[in-house]
Length: 133
Image 1: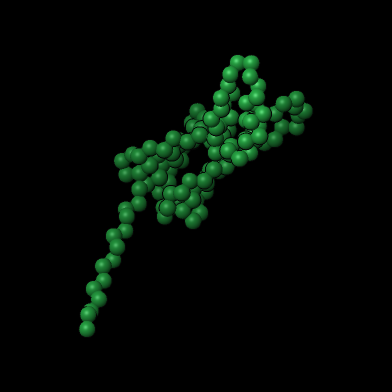
Image 2: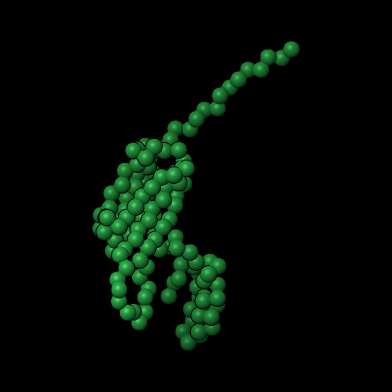
């Protein structure tokens, strides 16, 4: 089983289970639950984020201080579980810089949230001439 970090398994050797559980809080985080592909496209970037099992109404995308934050929260089911591994909520942020929210496009289809973020033209540094006396 891969818990989002490198693990070694040898048949019949459960000693690694002890190490996996001990180190999990240090090396594992929720970002592995929202796997993301980021690719460059003409005029921008495309983020494809896995969010299987969510309905469009359960997904939120916000932009604040250059960070694009994607979150999803399912309605909690009032049931008694013997084991619960499916998370009810996820959250992850991506730094996109100074982009206007109306320029970001979002589409959710077949468990994949696709965000298109335009490239921002880099500012050319202003050149000022200093008079030498």
